[in-house]
Amino acid sequence: MLVAVAAGRAPAERVIRNARLVNVHTREILEGWGVAIAAGRFAYVGPDPDGCAGAGTEIIDAGGRYLVPGLCDGHMHIESGMLTPAEFAAAVIPHGTTTMFADPHEIANVLGLRGVRLMHDEALMQPVNIFTQMPSCAPSAPGLETTGHEITPEDVAEAMGWPGIIGLGEMMNFPGVAAGDPTMLAEIAETQRAGKTVGGHYASPDLGADFHAYVAGGPADDHEGTREADAVARMRQGMRAMIRLGSAWYDVEAQITAITERGLDPRGMILCTDDCHCGTLVEDGHMDRAVRHAIACGADPLIALQMATINTATHFGLERELGSIAPGRRADCVLTSDLAALPVETVIARGVTVAEGGRLLAECPHLDWPADTRATVRLGRTLTPEDFRIPAPEGAARVRARVIGVVENQAPTKALIREMPVADDEIRADPARDIAQIALVERHRGTGSVTNAFVSGFGYHGRMAVASTVAHDSHHMIVVGTDPEEMARAANRLGAVGGGVTVWRDGAEAALVELPVAGLMSDRPAAEVAAAAERMGAAMADCGCTLNNAFMQHSLLALVVIPELRISDLGLVDVTRFAFTDLVEGPA
Image (cartoon, rainbow, N blue to C red; front, side, top):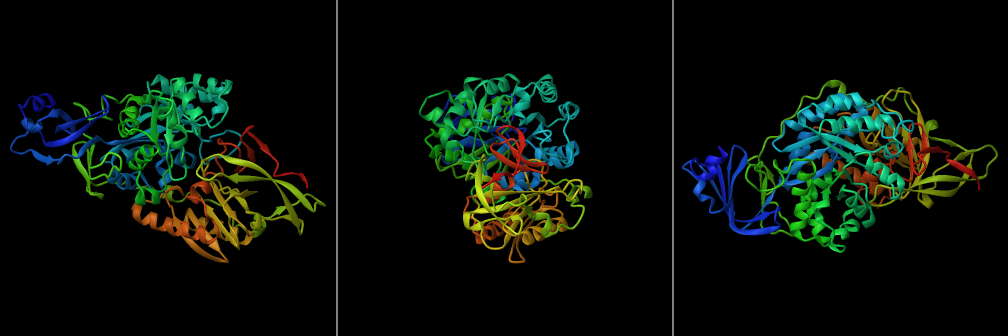
């Protein structure tokens, strides 16, 4: 069919003419070119595509606009948008995203391989390409946290035979790989045996022996870099440096200088989002936002587009399938009137117009999520304020306590030491010095356990609490607050509604985002969820928080594979040593 259409012997289904075609293979703009589409693929790419048209051909006159490949997100977690795959697709299609490489390790921690399969199945139902990376690390750091389910090498081997699996999700247990952990290496081996790509996650600034050992283990990319040196080191080792712009991760500007200033080959760099909140998707965009940002950081628009199209497709072995406007590829493309501002005016996926002028035109089918996926918050008992009180060492008047320090717009935290007063034999939050309390509530098995610590950086004041069952990556429940009573109210509320995020202030609920699917996602439309999330953000701000996208910071405080200090259901974790540490260092 494609040959006949390209030769003019059979009519194309659709012809786009009079375009400025962006060729990401040669990095050039071809004036007056167009495409002929048949069977969901590009048949002809060149000047004068009208010769491929027939009586029933739809003609789209680009009017001199740019025709660019559909945008690809090289690494992301659908669950971070608080949406199911169908609703996430519906949100990002109008922004020109036609391909996603999604790692559902959030739901893997809650529902195991079955949850991954549900995400995979709904992803394959969508009108755009959603490839699934089989999660590698549930738990992310064995021995330091407890998950609802664990992922095994046998699970990885099984998943490699599923039709939509593109590779192994980010290998977060980087110390395990560097140390030759047999389980981690077995998962990598199963992926390589299937001829698929191993995703990386090296969240350490140390580029010495451990880094080199990790690369030797097989991960082919990494999105955890925050410095130019990180991007350079990865590309020099043959990895792809995935530079991310998520809702709260602004890692592009510091790393893209490896291309814009040092002049390194841009084929080694890929744009991704990692974690994008539904509010960001609705208000600001998705991969179009990332491309615009890269351009604003000094990247040539054509290079920025390569980083969001052909570089990504090539990395996953799909260069002959997508990522460019070339014969035989899936007909995924975007019409835009400005390469730098990148307004997404028309989106075509698999040869069909799926969005126009920011309006979704395609159907995004839903799975019928089983009832047990909506009943995953098991507290085991009603929590009380006593669960959120921190006893002081006997006889202490002041103590030196370890405090998790939030770093705005970055995933890493700081391990702080703060002097804390003791009152009534308790160590209490100190809002006047921006020290709130944090608790990790076990919610998978109903053990009733609560781990308490302190966190700084949110700026909360008054009597308040924020609770969330989105708590990367083990997804227990994180509660941050200034008052034990408010913290208990918030935690019990999420137990009652089956998961989500709630903000409490002065004894009343100020905002609620219900996330009934695994306590992570809603199958309501993105705009509706984003509106609830906006109310949540406003309520957090009313409690004194000024951080950019503070909820994303909140939700990562239990991620025990990113330095420096985190909390888990088993204790306070020093991630620089991958070991538990005491909350109280000693008397002041």
